Length: 490
Image (tube, rainbow, N blue to C red; front, side, top):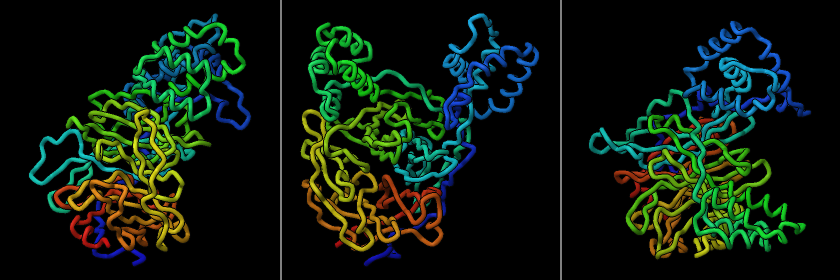
């Protein structure tokens, strides 16, 4: 079999198109967006300062009237942006509160987070399961939002699935929020792994690591830097080591959202240099620990314009997100997907560390993902270029169900499936001989043509619910009876 089996994937009518009305406010500095960077900030602020009080008030009032309804607490954003550029204000100027807000308005602009594309979803049970009928499940759908400049962020939608094959996507309107960044509780083992991976294991870094507790905050880190002996501070490599220490520590952070901001209005926006060009393809899963406690976890790809890096999100209720780097040879490429529980006492993940083969990696005692064991490589015509996973494995009585993606002629992406042994997930026990879902004639055109791609499906009431991106143009949904899918495997 080389193409979609007509009896497996049943496409649903529900569709999530990209919505250009979904905007956030970003800092805008005139001149810094030009090919030849020359900030015009000082001149602009001087022109604003020369306006009369009446005109200043009128301009601010008009701006708030036009834009306040599209954003949460726009005045606070204007004040924040003013604080970022206030060093450009002439020291002899005494700007009024109104003028400061107006300066902030001139140094702000709207950015449509999904103006270019909406794609690559994953689906997990929603934290709120109240007010549902029998057979229904509320789900959270993570979304890769792509805006101008191919800049990706992580957004969300809420839907209700069941009973039967029904799926209803909730309204996504309203102002967006990018959350508040806060200090994280950092891990010494991850800092040590990052320094080793990047070749900064020296006496300065060893001294800092030796004076840090297993878990530390930003203040602990600064105190550790302050304890570096003078003799080490004069070494030629010290300045570079300190820069790397600060950069690696900054890669871990916390992002929080107010409880009154609904999930579909929350946007995880790039917050570090490593992810400055995008947070791509989040694969969410509901993880249950050995103690029986559950939490949301997700892996995503941080991209800085040149390099990629694996990151993990952890959250109890999708309103407070802890971001940490993932270290080790098993996660040095895109497409990491976590198992929803430990297997044989080990934390496992699917990966594609060689760029073209689905592999299995395990977390070692130093919190580094080990070299991967190959599971499935490009073999059939529809997947000869490369294969990878379409999200976290799903536990079934027959085995771990792994949805895959394969790339064939003309870079055409299709979705397939594997079954791994429950106790020995390094063993593939069955696979679909062909694609489960391939681009239809109505799905082949878009931002990236000829692609169907998912970052995670969900099992509910004996049915596999599969959200997928159609040619990076929109998100669509399909269902597959689990028994039918398992029976089709060989």
